Length: 64
Image 1 (cartoon, rainbow, N blue to C red):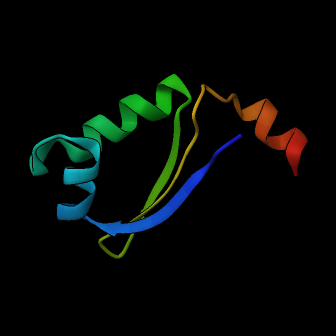
Image 2 (tube, rainbow, N blue to C red):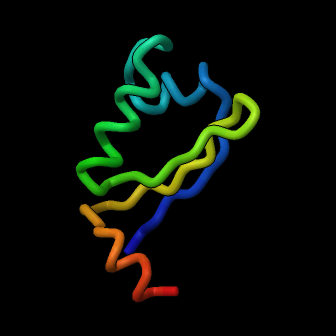
């Protein structure tokens, strides 16, 4: 499974997600609800993990 991890600022994350800057948090929350993305915002930086297919929380716990 190809997993993409990174750390971007808000402008870079908007470009990566393909949305306007004001819609970044809403768009990331939607992708997280679908299971494609795990993210958190720390001091203006977005840390994220993008999965190629939906992943449940239970599946993530099993891989630890």
